[in-house]
Length: 238
Image 1 (cartoon, rainbow, N blue to C red):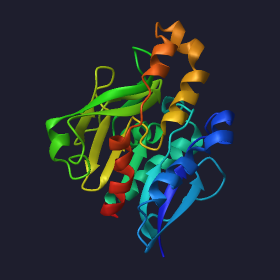
Image 2: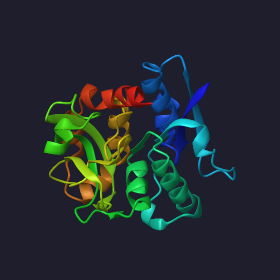
Image 3: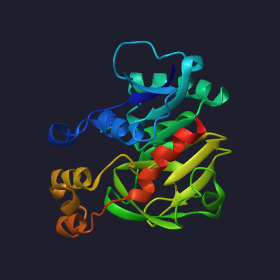
Image 4: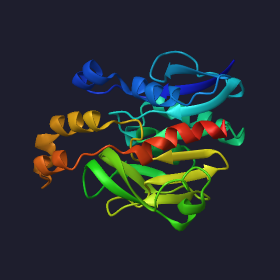
């Protein structure tokens, strides 16, 4: 049976894991609601000392977020770059999220690093570009939609040949396309509102330090059904 591989690149905060599940579980919950019968979900922890699955055996690849930083160039993370290049050349459907977004961009010739304006956290408005409005994955979304975000690093420079599909006031590269069936997003379509609130609670002090108001951010958290729908729709390209 064909396999959709969830590439685990990190762990959520312990309280998030206890209450809602780890990153891979959040993806499994969302993807399983629309998983065709001919597909199965499999998790591979990229940080473990195990070989990467052969690209040719995979129906699709989904890359999770992480508390690691792409610019730290950890060996396990750097080892993923040629594997992702192979998957792109093979036209394997891919969707990278947060760390996965930044890692894909870096693997394909872009630059990911700390954002000069600091951390972006909370439920924020994201806007489609003209390219995003006609993109086969994104065109189902309204031009402006709410999305859950928590990141200190961003794609600072998009790879040559990539297409910017979404942006907002903080980040010029909220979503990118690299090939016919290869996308990545800075926001978290797998997050629910309770998960987003848990992240904001953990980040209160850091957010205050950069001039944010945690209580306002918490009050503004809403369900993000439009952005979450990307995960289910992605499966239609597998």
